[in-house]
Length: 263
Ligand SMILES: Nc1nc2c(c(=O)[nH]1)N[C@H]1C(S)=C(S)[C@@H](COP(=O)(O)O)O[C@H]1N2
Ligand SMILES: [Mo]
Image (tube, rainbow, N blue to C red):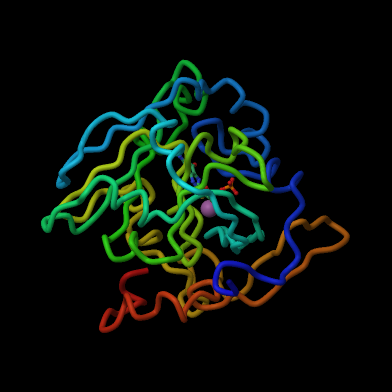
């Protein structure tokens, strides 16, 4: 299965779990590993609503148990110009979505992260720019693409809390912020959903946000990325690839669209 793997060196477990973005626990890269332990993930349920024939509240066990896990080794490219290679455990997002039987009005799927300020200190911070809960979304055909993945684990273990336990999205051809963590709500919609970073700064973070080295972020270049781990002594800069190297599987989704405009 060459499409779902890579020969590139995997980022060590330690870096995958101690250099994170999860603003619910603070904006520092080590805040999530330090504080996500406070998040309560058991019990966990996910509300499914909107344009589908099987709405309802599902326990995480209901969602996970009947399905077979697979491993996928994907590149993750953050919009901040660092990247990792992570072995995820999970299921194709399409398989999960089909169980809810979206109807013909479902053009987009929206996701929401847990909101629990008592246990998520970043949600209590007066400096926070995000209007909680963290929100993301995909066009339906993007969500049904074979690459879109719902992860329950990494490196063969259940997802660490700082990586988005118990269930997070992985959309490897888009900037990392689309891969929303600790999901509690899935909604099928006719209209394009509002998404957190797009609401904060639409000129910097588009709804689509496909990885594209030809379109710079207004404040920095996207031509290259720092492949982790890196230190002051050794920084591994590599060229960023269009669609993060997944163009063969996804470029067709954007035919006729101005990818610069939709950044
Ligand atoms: N709920 C939530 N999901 C989130 C984020 C966040 O702050 N909150 N950060 C995003 C960003 S910017 C990135 S790069 C990835 C990082 O995933 P990782 O920490 O597992 O590597 O998570 C994404 N998902
Ligand atoms: Mo990111």
